[in-house]
Amino acid sequence: MVSKIRVLVGMLVLLALAIASIALLASVKAAPLWFTIVPLGILFIGASVGRSAGWFDKKG
Image (cartoon, rainbow, N blue to C red; front, side, top):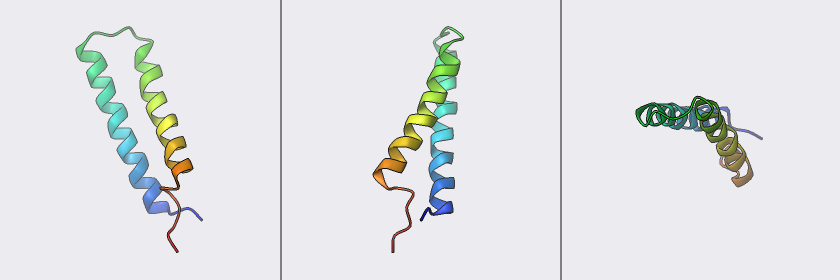
């Protein structure tokens, strides 16, 4: 079973990392393509790793 609170907190952390990556890309004047690839990669890969590691599962 999935814990909704853990999923919410985990996705908020990933969202914060994605927003921080956008700010970092803007500060180094990266190409526009990177503004799509990097944040989406952080969200999708982070969610996949969290799900695989069982971070979002209820304990007991």
